[in-house]
Structure formats: C-alpha cells, structure tokens
Image 1 (cartoon, rainbow, N blue to C red):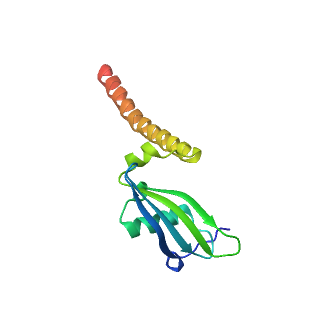
Image 2 (cartoon, rainbow, N blue to C red):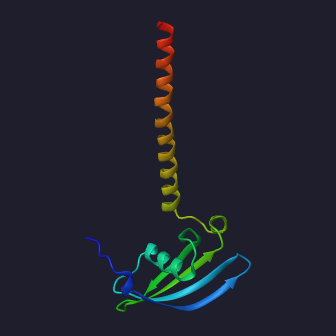
Image 3 (cartoon, rainbow, N blue to C red):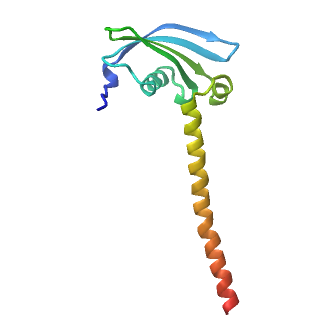
Amino acid sequence: MQLKQDNSKMEFKIIKQEENHLFNRKEIQLEVKAQITPSRAEIQKIISEKFSVSIDNIKINKIDGKFGTDTFIIGASIYNSKEEKDKLEIKKKKEIEAEKKVAESQKEDENKESKPKEESKSEEESNKTTE
C-alpha cells in the first residue's frame, strides 16, 4: 500500500541559495514540512515550479529527515541545461539501467517497424516474378 500526499499540504521555504559559477549551477537548500517523506519526483516538481526550470535540469542531492518530526531538509542543484547536468553529475545504477531499457525498447520498436516494410517488399518482388 502506497501513501500519497497532496502537494498543497507540503509547505516549503528556501533556507539557502547560492550560485556556483564554477559548475554553472544554483545550489539550494529547502525545508519541507510534510506528513510523510516526500519523493524525489515531488520535490523536483516543487523546485521546477518555484524556479521555473525543467525537471531534467534538477538534481536532488539529499533528503534528510529527523526522527519524529515532519520537517525535511532537502539539498538540490539546479543546472542551466540537461547537458551540463549529465556532464557533471554521476548517474546512479538505477538511472543507467532505466536509460538502457528505454534505448532497447526504442530499438525493438524500430525493428518492428522495419520488418513489415521488408516483408511487404519481398511479397511485391515475389508477385512481380510470378507475373
């Protein structure tokens, strides 16, 4: 059973925000008040709405919660582009596997599309030879 929470019930405030010119990113720290630990996707959505950036440009570094409280400290980095983020951030094993699965499914889709075309061409050629 998964517990879902309403984003409107989450309160957040920016604790620290600084520009890191060396890595071309904005490093922020947020304090979020919520009943359950917010997911990375929920946090990315909140940050993207607040700072008007794409979710792809955000890297959540940590989510710290203290036992018995409903307050969480979130560390995140906001990059100018997805390319800069991919160049600087180390990807987790899950992210790498997910990208591989997406690439494999795209290849399978391309192969499925090309096979019917090849089969129809071979049928046309066999019809021409029989005539």
